[in-house]
Length: 609
Ligand code: F6R
Image (cartoon, rainbow, N blue to C red; front, top):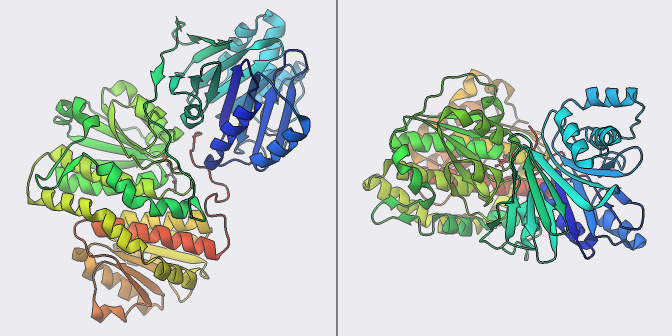
């Protein structure tokens, strides 16, 4: 989704901002722009629709340099992806420039009031009201900072904002409410961005803005005032003690394929130093400080969105089976509006790859004053969710660039397995067996990946269909849901996931020779039950692709195609099946000629509710 980068220093910041915007490309965007505030010239503004290279090409023709630059990648929410709608946005007299992530919910009311006062608008965006509102208050107060504060007071919604103006050529203002913003302190300049990865290229010294903070940067100094507490404070400097791992494509044609092939290494990293299969015990340093609280927990609510939600469903089955604690999984976007009693002995676990998903953050905000324990299972270190939870476990999946989540999903499920065992904290036959399986999982996934050509052939056979059902029972059910999501995301084919047992309660009506079913049986125990559902589908001429960890000669000829997963036990077969389904979706998308890394209409990090 939208991305923000800004530079203030003594040298030229245009290239830094451009590089920063490129770093944010993977999050999805449809236009990009920059504004430069120059000491002895009028402000410079350039926006282009499409890729950042378009902006770069136009910039080269202009030979512009500036020591105060703000830039933005836009993912359209209000108004189509056009030059006019892209950021930065400016006021009528072109003196105030703003880049904005988030949504201003009451912009129509503000716009009407400003129009009544004589302002005009060139875009369909919510953002354009902001520079004009600041302009309006500046005309009244002649105090720029005061004007910003008054304007912010009128806004309802969420924002991360950079504000630069030719009225104050040496100052950059930043503020946030519900959308991340971080400033990094390099030797001779300050770089600000909506994503710390941009900053890490420059410095490890950062400060994260909190909600309602208004920061004023001048030279290499930053002054922060919290507009809610009215406290003025020096920035709390944190040192990011990790480096960005090289995440180039190497020999892979796309990030999605590369990230699927990263999975074995991802699991090794997620389990390194955390599991002892011989003893059957798990160590999760991130939970150590809250273990005494966790001992008194009698209910867990998992909140998450999309793929992370399906990992959460996996977690529900795992925690209930292994640790005997009742679990509910709720879509974060629904949790916010659900009125339910929540006692202090409840633990809320937020699962999020990016750690920045607005709905998941809102779910955590909802329980802020309930006194419940809040845990995070997050991939991006230092992200908002990792900072607003009481404790948590990092996935260590490395940067995930393809919009469709693959390796992060697997690491979330692995972490949930470890968490379930840690909650129980008992060394027994079950814990030893599960940890042995987790230890062997990377090599089993490697075995599966070595059959990529077989999976590709199957995908090519099925890519002609317009509708799909994915079914499974038990752990295979969230896998089926995730398989359907993956296929629709990257291939735009209609796909639905169902609990296999539900087929005869409705979906069976849709089955005919043009409606194939991908049936998942990763768990041997459920083979016969799920196979009965397959027979019901076959009786209605529905094509069936079976993905199974059980070799069964009798049933082999009763389905159209079968893919055998490496042998495993417990829920491991369902994880292996999920990796198969990721590759299946990948090859279907490739066969149909789509951009698999950047599916239409989607963004990587969904920072608006
Ligand atoms: C699907 C996908 C999304 C995300 C969802 C939550 O492939 O990636 O469904 O899982 O937007 O994102 P995070 O995990 O970053 O909170």
